[in-house]
Amino acid sequence: MISKKIFTSLNHSSWIRNMFEEGERLRKLYGADNVYDFTLGNPDPEPPKEVKNSLRDIILSDQPGIHKYMNNAGFEDVREKIAQNISQNTNLSVKSSHIIMTCGAAGGLNVALKTILDEGDEVIVLAPYFSEYLFYIDNHGGVPVIASTNKDTFEPDLTALENCLNPKVKAIILNSPNNPTGVIYSDKILKAMAKLIEQKEMEYGHVIFVLSDEPYNKLVYDNIKIPSILNIFKHSMIINSFSKSLALPGERIGYIAVNPVLPQNDLIISGLTFANRTLGFVNAPALFQKVIASSLDAETDISQYKKKRDVLFDFLTGLGFDCIKPQGAFYLFPKSPIPDDIEFIKAAAKHNVLLVPGTGFGQPGYFRMSYCVSIDTIKNSLPAIEAIAREFF
Image (cartoon, rainbow, N blue to C red; front, side, top):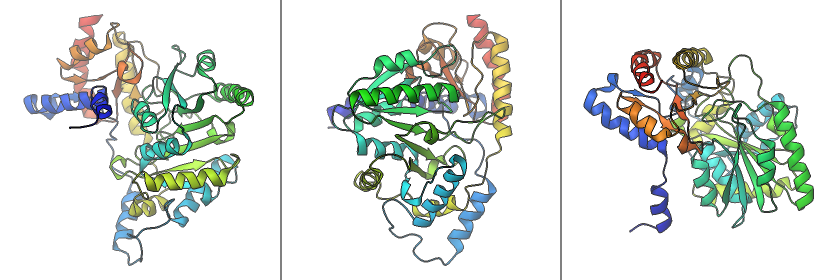
């Protein structure tokens, strides 16, 4: 009844969703207050007041054309404001023509991959990774190649990356701050990567694109500065969304920013715009394009996430869990106390604590906890987490 490819993919679908659905079952049995669900990256805070005010004002205005078709790349004035914002942060001359408005970062990645990939081209993904990347690559005839990271830091391992590079590689997907680890890739390691990639481009005689998935770029702690991908990698695109930074995951609004120094810029932008249309997105949601344009300076209260991070991190490490302290995003990625991370999360579920196995992120032996939940959920879960720890330590 359905395609063989989709049937096969269903059997390898997201552990995140699987565990969330298990949570739905447990909530019906025990009540929502007695189930501690750390599975989804679904922001707990409501969108900032600037976003709500902008949405109200636009809806109530008599501005004509707000719900009509526009250029497939998006409204010109919206793209201009985003371009100006990026220019200020990078000192690059980013123009509206370098911006393609998309249906979230997921839509943006699919648009970018559709534009650049030929059948059989390889795309390097750094493990641990957001599991949907593999499906996005496959959607457009690409072949994912997994490169391991440094287990002490979860930063890119240059030796592992070099071993994956070959003439078939067309792109590398970066995600920093990273889902699931919360790690921010350092300026030093990214510049070393850029040097390596440039050497391989000269050797192979073609461009290797760096696609930087950055939905967490505003969720950063401890005054850490995120290196600018556009300043480091010449052949780069930023794929961003406002799902996490402004707590708008259901609105599906984001953008692609093409590096202005990327060769054949006009051709690439034309390809992205064409793919945006023919993939069926047509254009990003018109209303929220306008909302975003007037909310670029709005911010989510980062202190909420920092407090939750610190409570969970301190408690887990105090119990004996091994974990790198996240620098951004809203995830913890501790090491499982037993090698079989799937068995561990099954054991945790018996205490109504829902986690996601590292296997789902290409990193067996770990598990992910999403702390974008209420502080009450975190505090109420601590006795259950302690009971889990007593079983394994």
